[in-house]
Amino acid sequence: MKTNFDTTPSYIEKLYRSITCPIRLLPNFLIIGTQRGGTTSLYNYLVSRPGVGHASVKELHFFDKKFHKGPLWYRAHFPTRIQKYCFERSRKEVFVTGEASAYYIFHPHAPKRVARLIPGAKLIILLRNPVDRAYSQYNFEVELGRETLSFEDAIANEEARISKEREKILADEKYVSFDHSRYSYLARGIYIDQLLAWMKHFPRSQFLILRSEDFYADPVTALEQTSKFLNLPELAPHERTKKYKLHNYNQTPYPKMDLATRKRLIEYFEPHNQRLYDFLVVNFNWNK
Image 1 (cartoon, helix red, strand yellow):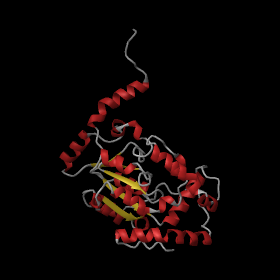
Image 2 (image 1 turned 120 degrees about the horizontal axis):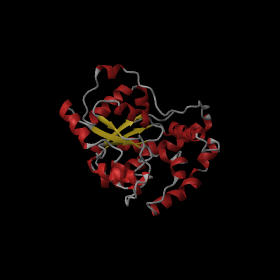
Image 3 (image 1 turned 180 degrees about the vertical axis):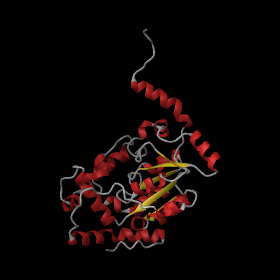
């Protein structure tokens, strides 16, 4: 029998989302960076805890690359209010949900977008030695087949590759630049400028800033700090003794960085790191 209703899969999906999205949660927390700093690992550790609902995928990229899809699209990826209600009623413990998109910290429009939609969100940041972070990102891009230059040539050409892309992003909020996210090896490591951009929109109390090297060395302590920040219960004994494997690491071993290049990058980042240390009143000891 002929029908006047659209039954195509795309329409059915939109209809389903229009019905379910209003009862979907918005995230309580975001892990906003930094790329190659342990964000995937920390997110996976968190969502394995009771009372932490995971998003449909870890990196939704809503506030950087997919903002045009709108808040209903974003909500559709999170648990429902019913899940939260049932968990909190039965367990007498808090239920939170969140996502981790490591490009958020670096994207120029992300802070104000997050502030508009979820002003009360708790923001978690992992900061890694910017020299190591840059080299890890470079080798990750090589592994994915998206980088063909040598590391030295890539950082020498970085400004030419991304400066105009940043200008286009600032001029047009709908513009999405893959080069800006992929080839920003050094720029992503100037953390102080990124933090200041975010703190124009959020108070310091809504941030948890962890040193990646500390997280790698002692994931249990970092998970305890993060859980406390999110008002989650203390770790159970089995969570303290569990072996936490790293996620999203470079699959292919890569050669050590050239010592002269490393020395040059340490000197390049030194004044930016010092500004960061002064601002946070902490020394991350990234001088080697």
